[in-house]
Image (tube, rainbow, N blue to C red; front, side, top):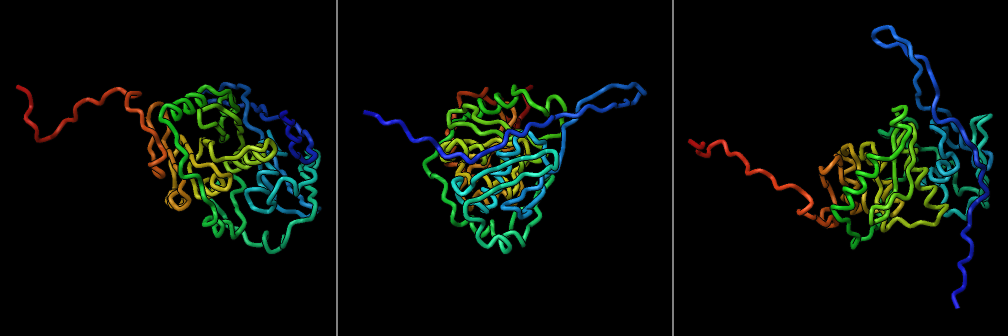
Length: 295
């Protein structure tokens, strides 16, 4: 007889909703007036056990998941069971987090920060890079070329704030077969990845068979966060940085950049990609400058 699984632990969460766009009056080059939508941006100050930790500038679409994922990716909280509640109050632009036993050495762990290339609140607490050596991604994970194309096409057709108002980054989590699991947008790509990390924790999802997609560039911060989530594949429609590439090679992550249409550049973790040449049109014979021209 199969026994039902015990209910997964979830902290007490608020359900704070906020408008994701704001209407403004615009004047074009011909002097014509129109009303357009722009993304919202608001501060969210995180308090853990009444101690101020950080202020995040956010769209506000998933503030509870963002807070949880931020604490997870900063390694301030090691397990979701350590969180009692997360309560967002937009009246004061703050979120109150209550933990079971506090954060060990919180003053020391939040004192040193490293400013990163992430837009908005792009900082990570010092010591994060020191933990990279402890991350081991699954070596046997594989990703088919056809799945890469499925992911890119899904993102292309996804309804989004970006299509409506622009000026935001999107991140998404996919299964190894290319099924969309989460899609989150925010004013900073680091916020979007943190929100997905929080959602994964809430739903008890592991990362070893998942694929992460971002519209932004693959910086060291993005690669580290993806690795902390245990995800072996990181895709982007943009490029990568030297340090992002270095960290990916260090942890054994597969980086696919410039993903658009049928094109991509696999920059690290080459052994994980399963190429499917039949999916592509054959290339024309290359022209050689010194080859004899036809009469």
